[in-house]
Length: 330
Ligand code: SAH
Image (cartoon, rainbow, N blue to C red; front, side, top):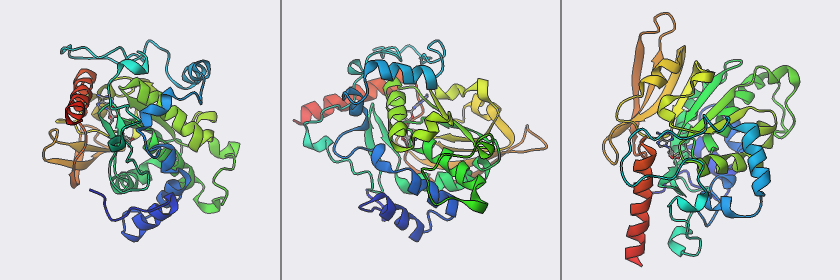
């Protein structure tokens, strides 16, 4: 169901999110204006299909990965439960991973980047609705805006929120003399204080697509190494860069993964949907106490419906089933 904030352009969508009180602060507004959703939800086809277009050569793609992703050993998705059938390795070619990559079929050509509803991105995953993303950005805003903040985006999918978080931190730091030119290079003095945002998704083609999306929408985030991605099980966090001032989780967990709690900085905040797949889920904010790091305070925000934070094998099976159901309908 489309929410009321839908627009015809990115600016109109942002205007509506603001009008409805979902975007409250100027920095969140600026970030949403600076990252156009059209690069993350291409009209008329699932985002994952963009990988098979010749816009980036295989060699270029490989170079990008080497520059901006972890070495291949740690970029290997870890499938913790070996349930049959097995998904391909995280670095397998795109074509062996299922997920409605049928450009020619009208029913899959309905994506509208400026509609306020979740949009299918392939691989049994969706980009969340803008009003939920605005809510998450507002909840994490002050933690992301700390000088030199480290931010973890688990289940980064299209990379949209990863980019939003990076811009949000930049605008918070520049609040006093914010430049009107959002594409202007960041001054070196500010650069050291900018947040670094780390995106993890266990679907490797989505990780590759997210790099391409950000290269098109906000290339400075990649050129200045302000975002980094890896294909891996996000429930394990990214220990090499912990602790994190802010952790965002984009898929629903039955229980909050212990590693993520441990990797949250004392005084940090995690925003995560909790609850069973297809069931009663709630978005919660978890604050880790600064003076007593063994203490976590959880606040319920709102009821939500997210895809599950799960094993890669499980998601792969879901994508296969979704494809089979669609085949049967035809
Ligand atoms: N925040 C993303 C939305 C992602 S949908 C966006 O707005 O674009 C949820 C994502 O979580 C999917 O891309 C899915 O592949 C990923 N995911 C699910 N379980 C995961 C796990 N255990 N580790 C890493 N990523 C996972």
